[in-house]
Length: 347
Image (cartoon, rainbow, N blue to C red; front, side):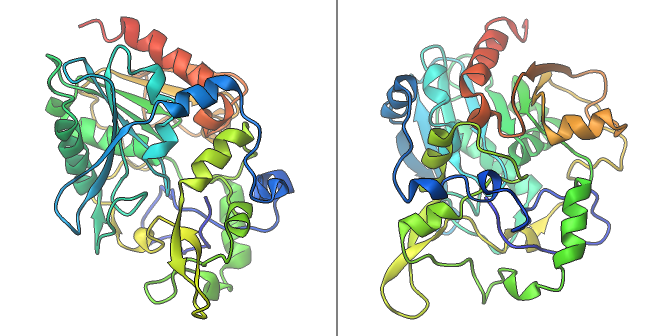
């Protein structure tokens, strides 16, 4: 989803925050607008998957609660799923059921996102501790081995950080289209063009916009980095679960706004975060990277940007997919994960 443009902090080389642009084609700028609030047609496999509802709970005390979704039986090998930037645990709700027969599966919403509580400060180290707390609360350590962490995009960066700082907490790690370089050139150009529009930047006293109707809110949903939504029924499912009720600013009743904390990026402490400007740290757990064949990350690598992961990490390509693989090719992602987990890691 998109928030409005924010300035990049000095000295920071990896920028995973949203940016806003109206100079995008309609299928990128507003992929759900044409449905006018109605749900797009969906295939039966998707309906069956989302009908396998997770058990929903919270971990932690009030003010620091984390939204937790679980599938499968405690005692089976554990999988912890971590979503991306400004997203939420339900990004995995149509993927997890395909894994739950063989595994105890958990997905949690990072602090400041989904139904998890907002905080005055966010940090990579805290995200790592939150992940372990959710894994333990979900019973992912009860299957006789430590869980495998799986993270998409910004969530992949959290998994990578946790694997470097606390390798003893996980059996292995799978990154899904995760990059560590600087922002793409078009993002930098967009930033230059729109920096004067600071009045649109959400702040503590100027929060995200509240839309009068669900149709209006869904019509503003978009993916970041910008790309078409490969399967609109998936995008719609995600978008509806990205919204919450909120008072209209004029006092006329309730409307809809995004769940994520719009000031998170100003409050994020990136100390120790992965950065493309530094030498990669030693990788201490088995790790695989699954990426989209048309992903911006791969585009940039093909143009000469070095891979932060180095040669030690094996990679699996998902054809006909951009960055948001679970939207573009959800069944291919399921197949890749199931096939990989069946034989890897060897011990």
